[in-house]
Image 1 (cartoon, rainbow, N blue to C red):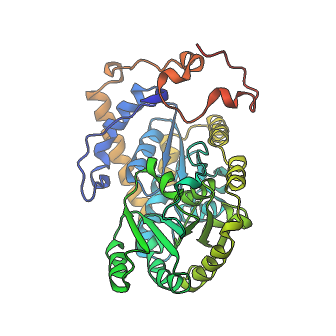
Image 2: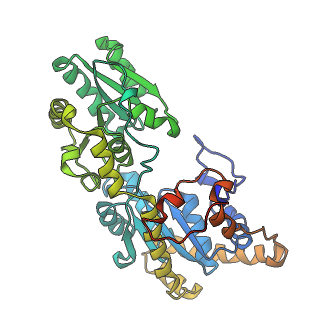
Image 3: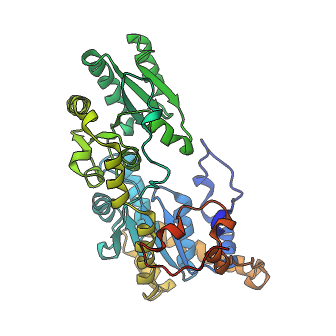
Length: 408
């Protein structure tokens, strides 16, 4: 793929709605081991604690003596049954990671409590946005002579779509020239369709369905205000993308949302329909006082994927100096997690050890093909030869004092 990125498609059968977690336990070990050996991997970095496949990859990497990092993007409660079970799983397969990265301080507090990760090995690195792609374009605003309110998210209960159902009639009753543009799919889609049919809002509420990521900026540029009704958020990247496109943001004040934008760019509300409606009314009064270009420039100065990469690299350097935990210490660590989780972890580690030995017997490391390495020197000389890439290297060279050779 572009920029030397390599992707492996694992032959795992989907179970429900594309989920392959059920069959991604012990059977995935030989596959992950072969990939890690083929690519001479020194460090394994996984994302989302809810991904069982990611957890299995990290446990395999730990068993092979590799360094491991996990990035958490989600925010869970401590009372719901599903969250309790997931927290137990996190304690098990994240117990031996060398470091963790969270996308906000609220996410870090939540993650260290529920996964029992050492907070001194947990770092906060926020997400960023490509401001070259998400830039203001007022000429795309449509329909004209309307106050366009955009909401793009998964249409699920966790995203607060029930609030949206209550908000829309209230806003249209006071501001009949408002126009809601809703993008996304999910279990709450029939509820929105029922709302439109009940109140005859076909001309005031527009359902876009699922929006491809490369089309999101066009949907955002149609609006004046962006509305986020989520019940939980670690870091609302859609808010950042909307602000980069020059939209005034109205959002629930939950999780890491207050850390994303300055107060003048986001109107925060309590997670209920009444408070969200009040803040939306304020945004409707103020949206035409906001400069799209100024909001875009603020986001551009605050967030950069290059800064994210540099901070992540410092985490890598930090953990590479740490000693590797051997199998005996991992076994003792498993025992410390209590009679249920600890026993399960010990049994799994024993089975994993047996399977590893069998895999090494049938598929010795000497017989695994080693692929050709990516030529980093050629990439630096002419990055555009390798396809589209996120960073405009030469345009950023001066800002970061990089001594780059001229393009060929």
